[in-house]
Structures are given as structure tokens and as C-alpha cells.
Image (cartoon, rainbow, N blue to C red; front, side, top):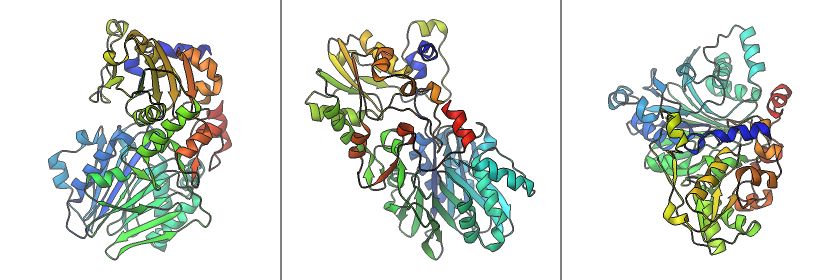
Length: 479
């Protein structure tokens, strides 16, 4: 408990984003037969996926003969200028926004990455995490492969390149069958755009269409942003090949079961996305309603923590009859280059990222809805801030079950020793965060808010994962 308490010395303005599961990555790809500006379309697609990664961004374009790439550290709008996009001419493209779950945070590990193989060039961008990359990397190095990065994606690239003499499609099938973990991958050759989704469908990937052009994207919101029509989700264990002949697919895994990451719906995905037939906003709304059924409270106002707690708060308010109101104002312009306030300003409790709307909470009993509690530091600051703003009571409700285990599949989660839910009872967590009451949605409630006829990865709640992690990795993260 003592190590958890030490974390509470950080001000709310600084720890709000740090005490959340970090978004994984976002991928986007387009193959055009309409002479579209594929670089600009990819840019806007990545802009819509910016919430999935803010550390680096990159685009690779093919003109039918060669691949041309630009990538750098920073947000999409920082990495690409109008002149840069004009220089990326071609008929197809892939793009990537990154949050580093494996490998150091530097431009060398930014994606996409390009490799040369016997038949030409290949570029790849990957969302997810492999659980067996070290074994494969060692085998490839023993065979003479030289690695330029420390990321899983280059392992996949080298596997494909090694088997390319059998043809790119066969090489991809062989490579994918050797890896284990979660992945939504977009691959670009001189004349093909290829998408791959892991056999469990842990990471999302969908297909869109714009006239005669096909698009691959991590989320459907990016299709909307470029004016494309949603066609369908890429199925678990499916390889989608798009070229001048059209679109076709290969099912590389015989037994597949869709087990989409439940945190896509709880927190990661944009609310205007639909993943595997489930609208993200509606699932959060249902979770809020179910949360009230399981954890009612007598209060004067229901508020949500921006942004992912808001839909659940609306659902809670609808089910309870308690009015919904805005409780916090979020500064959307605090980016990754945010300068830490001085100690003097910290002591004055400057709320730079979130500030309470005092007129809505002063003198009231408040129900606050958040999507999750990871370490507990943010939750405590939120409660303290509401009390300072005049709230008479603060009832904390969480629209996910208790997070007890780390994730191995493309989400940057703390070690188990740092997860407050793994080390404390609900009552102990309530005491630590200082709320008048605390309630989580149950596992059954979460599944009902999604779709009971579908499968989901619930590893961070139950410790049961769709893909078994290597013993040494599991031992390290679970201690």
C-alpha cells in the first residue's frame, strides 16, 4: 500500500494522462484506381486516428515502381507539411501513428518501416504486440538478418522478406503463421495493399471504399473523416489483398474466434467508431445504464471524466433520472510537448488539463463516472478537486471491471504491483481515492453492454488471455 500512496503526490494537472492505459497505435492504408491524392487522404485518416498514438507518425506511398516515405516524431500535423504531402505522389499508401508499447521512443522505431527483398520493396505498419518476437528475432539473426530497430514490426518484415521468393502472398501467410500475439497490419508493395488481422481479432481493422478506391483503417471514424463508405471489418485470421484486380482475401487460420480487446470499447476507440458490429458510443451508454443498475447512488448531478467517461455518465443519468451535467473542462491543447509547471505553481494546484466547473458541482452530491482506475492517482485527484470546488458528496463509479492484470497485446499497462485493483479491495481503493462510495461495473454487466454473442479479450480483468504469454514475460509483469 505504501508504494501506491507515494504516487498520490503528483498534481492532477500532470498525472491525468499518465494514470491511464496508453493507446496502442493506429494504421491506415489506401489503394486508388481513381488518381486520388493518396498521401493527403492518408494524412486525414491518421489525423482521425491521432488518439491512438501521439509519439510519431509516418506515411509510405507507392507510385507503382518504388516506395517513398516520410516519418518523424510528433503529432500528424507536426510531422507533415503541405509541401511534404505534395512530394508523396502515388496510387497507394499506408500510414501509422504510434504510441510505443515495445521498443524505444525514437524516430528509428517510428513506423511504417521499409525493407528490400528479392522481388522489390515492402513497407509495413503494425498495431499490436507479439508475444514471441524474441525467439523469432534470434532465429532470424542466426540466419544472417540484421535488425535496424527494436520493434516487433521489423520481425514480421524480415519473416516476410525471407520467404518472398515464393511470392509475396505466400510469404505473408507463412510469416503470419509463425507469429503469436495481437496484430492489425497494413503492408504496401509497389502494386499491392495488404491488410492482416490476428486470429483472435484482438486489434481492430476495417475496410472502406471511396468510388473505386479501397481503404484499410484501425477504426471506422477515419473512413468517415475522408468521406469513405464502411464496407466491413476484416475478419479474425484474414488477409485482405487489394490491387488493380480488386479485393480478395485469404483465411490463414482454421480456427478463429473474435476476441476484440474490451478496452477498445471502454476507452481507446473514438465514440464515433463501430468495431465488429458494435458502436462504441452506444456500448458506453449501455455500460453507464448497467452501472446504475448495479451501483445506484443518491445524488444531484452525474458527471463524466472527459472524454471516455462522458457517454457512460449520460447512460447512468438516463437510468437513474439524476440530471447529467458537465463537471470538468478539459484543455484539448495540452499536447505531448507540455512544459511542466514550476513547484510554486504545483503547490497552488494549477489544473492545466482538467478544471472543475464549480457552478455545476458546488453544494451538490456528485456521481463521477470514469472509464477505469489503473493506479488510482488520478481518481484521488479528481475527488479532491471536486471537494475543493464545493461538492458535498462524491460517489465514484467506474464503467469497467476492476483492472487486476497487465496486458501483453499492444497496450502499455503498468506492472501488476502498480495496479491498485490487484493490491487492494474495493473498500481500500475507496479509502485511497477519498470518495464517499465506489462502484465498478461487473464482468457480466460489461459483457451485456457489449454483445453477449461475441467474444472479447478480458485479460486485464480476469488474467485469462486469448494468447498465452511467454513465461518469462508473464513472470516479469505479474510480480
